[in-house]
Image 1 (tube, one colour):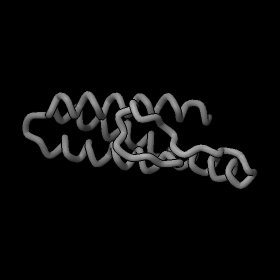
Image 2: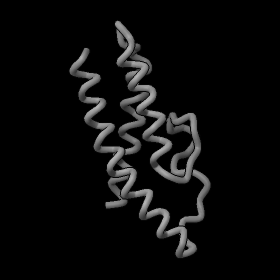
Image 3: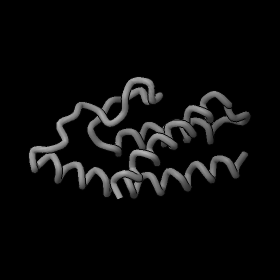
Image 4: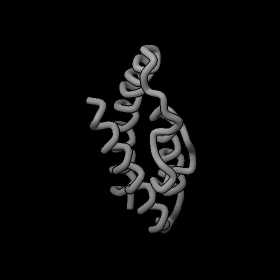
Length: 97
């Protein structure tokens, strides 16, 4: 199970760096009067927060990975949720490259 947590943490590092870059681009777009939206993801994405930037979403996933890392037997439902959220983040962040 340590390899699963390790892989999740590696993905989080990548997501965090990409989120910082994308948030900078979103800030620039907003200063130009663009980017008039309320949230990055819709309600069925699985995220419990609503934000206009990526970092809060990455932090939500990071807190869930921390919960998983503290469990003796990994909660499969939470693991699935984390993987789905990471996929959503990777897909949307790919459009900011």
